[in-house]
Image (cartoon, rainbow over all chains, first blue to last red; front, top):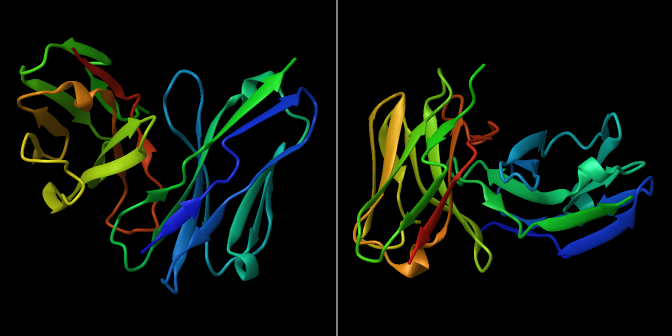
Length: 115
Length: 115
């Protein structure tokens, strides 16, 4: 069975602050992929990143960075110098080689960035 | 490029009525997924298709729900008869290939309200 836990249900920061969204996962699969999606107030789910279980290199894309640590089963997401437009619900998700095409989502973290 | 298209965007109906939600996946994608999002249960996978064939429908709540994919560019999710507890946002997503490692691209969702 797969499980994704996002312990932070809501985070509130002031613009320009850095913020880290936590994601912890459980899987018995030997090969798996981790994903982050963003759901802005408009409601659609936007794909942000995919990371496979064999690649533990951190990734940076502009103000976004991701830290994958297999030893702690975590795939955390950091937004540097947050902006009001970053306000959204962020979902971490997991797909494993024995789970077919099924994505298991975490419960989401609602990020509110105040001006 | 056109993304995943869903219609209608909003649907309000009365208990007992039939509801049909529609989805057009991204051209060339051969996996299609139906999800339901509620505050209580988060994002749940209802069913997914690969090459128009239903692969896993274990998430379909009950016999009132049915899904079809008559061709590669169209899928429907039908609820008959609808009940107030079916009120949710229903998302359709598609991905390239049948790999569990491929990212899924989501449509804008259909917000269903059953009175």
